[in-house]
Length: 158
Image 1 (cartoon, rainbow, N blue to C red):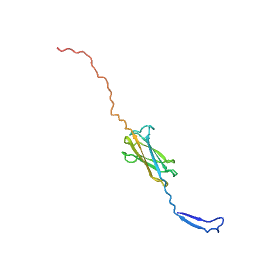
Image 2: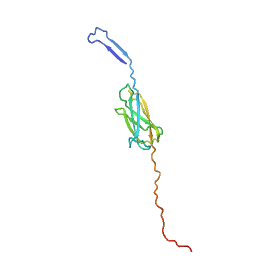
Image 3: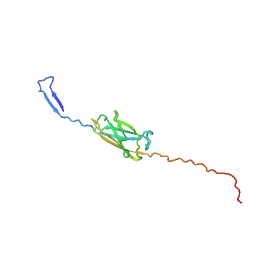
């Protein structure tokens, strides 16, 4: 509720004082959430299942709105129970977490970031897909060596 009073300070008799009020509703701004996934140990290379992932989320107000969202983004992927991580947004509206959860390997593995909103900004979700390479597994190592030969003499049979 906004209240306003009017009085002309230069000539208080020219206009009668008046009072009025109105209701004002402030709406929260819509947002867009983006997520990127990379190898934590080798940025720029394809992430590998079983190795640590660097997951970055950014939340920004939609076009025509200003300000910086605050709060956190929860990142999930199918095949992993619960959240991979929760990213706390910095003063620029982004943040990074490092997850060593066992993410399934394959092409186009989906990752989703969910922003819950704050007092000034609405919630939003964003998804991306990322190829995750299969972890190399060494089953065993074998070493070959030449067969032993014996030398000697053999007596003929009678």
